[in-house]
Length: 55
Image (tube, rainbow, N blue to C red; front, top):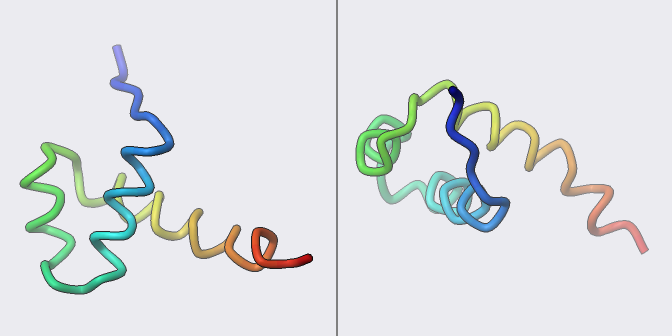
């Protein structure tokens, strides 16, 4: 069974990545998530940002 994460949790992780204070590997390890999953969340977030900011 796959683990599901809340949108809030995903956002928290992506914001950690974008701060660039830790490597993606360090963040993945700290949260027990595979780095590829975090990469997917980051990419989805960055793709959606222009839509969110569009009035």
